[in-house]
Image (cartoon, rainbow over all chains, first blue to last red; front, side, top):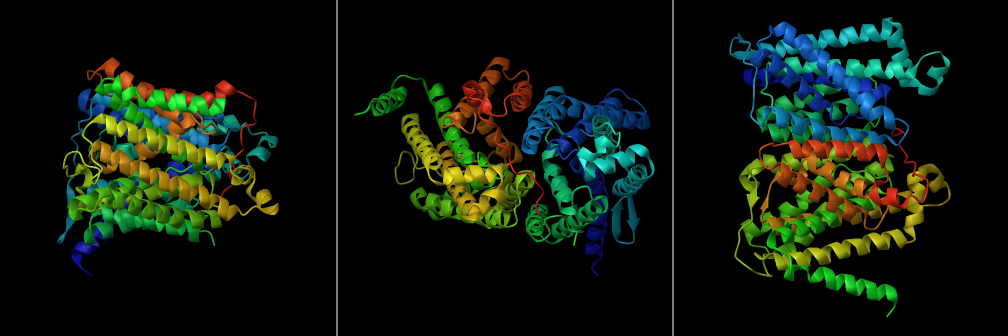
Length: 284
Length: 325
């Protein structure tokens, strides 16, 4: 195997880790509340700006700034639910998708208002790991590791705690859960907070690799939705598999042709798979 | 002549006489409102029946780029380029629409599949950058005023063209609304299985509105490109554009004839007013307010402004949103 192809494959797998983490948070919200937060990638953008502001401009310690970024996106997630989703929870789901679409315009332009359209970065660059002729981004490796740990922690939370069980129960049947003595509203809030928190974690990891600008959400937002739907809603494992499949296509396609063309292939594959396996790739 | 017909003639005369009194800047705004009003109307032909597409950027992109590329590289007149683009857009609509209808991909799954479609078109345009100019956009070669090249440097011509286009769009909307298929489509958007059970050909009705909507949107994209003379993948096929089309139609009220036009009027004049009001000192301020208003509109007026004003207590259509089976 060509060494550069191998490098592309490895980078693809590592990219898959971050995509999987992002898809995990959205999957939770999509699966439990049955709402598409079309502005989910823009929450990540907000987290990246919080980190940039606290770390690069206010000179907070990096760990503290990361924690603050994660916490603020989690709060943002709760606010999104309380202010936008909760009032229209009973109406057609497409309304909720569109309301968060308004949020997308708001967040992007608000970020422009505060920070301008310049590309910013936090100035932390991790060294590349050189293995023979290959060079592997250690920022991506870190992101991959954190994504795996995050997914595992979420799995334990969903399986081993009462709230986690309630979340899974709601994803299965939201009406019956009320009869079991679970207050759906609280579960929705917790889910939104976790979904936001995961976006915050992803924001910290992405800040190590990419510059932040107000429209960064547009570049990877669609990819996250595709990953989520492709994996099957509420199916965390399927989501991870889909994340790796799509990322590999993008990385290897980028190696052979161009990045845009590899996205075209990935999205076309998504459309085709939606028709072949409408409930996700893992479902028979 | 009936009173109704007379009223139409008076309105047409009034609208057609605008270029002789309005300053160029207003002409530009009016043309934009008419063109986008036409595109929003084209979207609402599908949207009102529960087929909420986030992929109309794809049809716009095809509609704008095909004639522009044919003209720039092969000197093919837009009179042939635009029909070619429409055919291509319709094919694209069918390629996506047929399996969606067949496999009952509805609700927000439909929205996401169509979103993927617009991303495919967007990224294909960017990927073919040697040919299309990529994200830098494409400037259409000008030869001055010419019917053959569909180029009119003055605004009066384009205003009248946009007016005719818009009126044609409304006529099509009206035709679909009054047509026999409308009841069928309403029934489908309420409950697809029940509709099929009473003998409605769900497939044919859905594909019919998809084809009409895709064709009109591509036509709108083509005319828009000829007016702007500069096209850019992000401003035609980006996620923001597809969302903007949906918002315009919904805010105005997609169940009413003039709803989408009112939506275009409001969103464009709001955007423009905020831009003028805030100037360039606060880049983004206008869109911040715009975003908040969109959210509030969706929450408090899901039937749109005209729908809310009429408030005839018509039941809000419950759309089929069950996961694809």
